[in-house]
Amino acid sequence: MEKRLPDAEQKILIGVAAVEELLKSSKTDASQMTGKWNEIREQSFASPVMKELAQLRPLLKLTIDRGLHEAVQASRDRMNKGNAPVPPSSGKAGITLPIARDIHRDAEELLGFAQEIQSVGEAVAWTLKVNRHIESLEFDIGNAPARVGAYVDDMKLMSASLVDIRRKANQALENYSRNQGSLPELRGEMERYLTQTMTMKYKTQNAAVSLVNTSKYLEPEAGYVIPATELKRMEVLAEYWKDGKNLYPLLRQDIADGVARWAPHPKAKWANYLESKKEFNKVYAPLLQGNLFQGIPLFEGKKYTELSNVVLDTETTLRTVLAAIAGEEKNVEIRRNALVQDTVLTRKEQEEIRKLEAMYGPQREKSLQNAVYKAAGGYAKVVELERFLENSDIKDGAYAKVKEELDALLKRRHPEQRAADSAMQTFYKQLPEAQKRVDAIIADHAKRKKDLGLQPVLNEAKLAKEKQFDTLKPRSQW
Image (cartoon, rainbow, N blue to C red; front, side, top):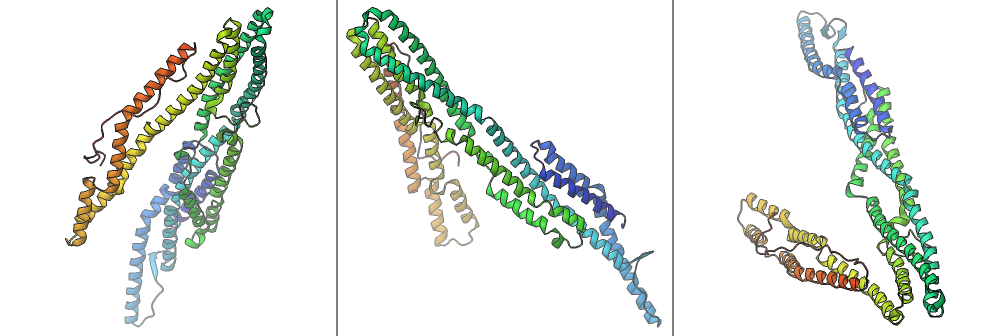
């Protein structure tokens, strides 16, 4: 037993040093973190020598109790015979009962410490999570110049080109009647500008999609955020580690010191995470806040989804010039007004569809459904009332009141339930008309664009699916 105790202490000391290295690690592979922790635990805190020590502890206690009993009996016998009592012995040569008690106490405390300190597994798992967050943030930070800079450079070049093309196109529109002799040359110039403009239009459309998707990708999801409760737990563990010697006064000093060295690591790791987050927010703030094109003429202040509209104005002017050059002088003003009006109508149609999607889309449907399920406390309130009735021994006025309240909830007569059901029912009742309106908008838009020789930009809208909603039946989810 005496030999096993130092062996166990040495195993734990090795494990403590290994854990310190693990908590300082920046690795993001689970096998190198939680997997390594399991290996350390098996080799140190739950090693065979620790298990053997745990098995021998009750045997040693039994031996101590027997030795004490024998010593007391021997003392009584000697006193009865008139002899002085002898010092107590454990029954083992060279080990007195006090020494045996000390060994047992040391072993008991060492085993308790080894069991309790395994909570460090939580810190290892937390460190792995923080490491992965830091790695993800640093990856995004490293890619920021390519993601952000390329868009800014493209919009600067396109802005300068569009300003120049607009100026020349407007001059040509004003002066085409005086340039009859150079109309073919002017047509060729305007067609080259139109080709450039269309290229820029497609680039802005692609940029808009990419910027919107990049913004969504960079926005943190629920699973990406580290809950404050986890950080609090790490702070509690850190205080526990620092107080190890007071909690286990018989513990070897070098083991207690090793555990205390763990304490700063979670806080340091969290500080690294905050620094990465700070840098991430700094480099991506213009993109996420919609200020990426600050200071760039034509594109400054535009939403990403509106970038192509900037090019559309130039396209409209160029097509008007080309229409005039092609011999449609009498229709120039009509054509231009039609194109301008088409632009205005398209924006209105887009806005109306966005409003209909907001009022009758899947998100609105989900919000109303949640209100139905949660009205008047929802399922949790029903369970609470049912348990009250089941556990009530006295059928008094309170019992009757709860029963009445439960009956009202089950039959969905509560004012909140009625209001939520009514809103849901109204939603589905009005949904077909909303769909008809969307279809009409898209059809009118397509016809107008076809008449103008343009491709439609409105093809579909995301509305909820039509379905029946019976407010008289309890929700099937209950």
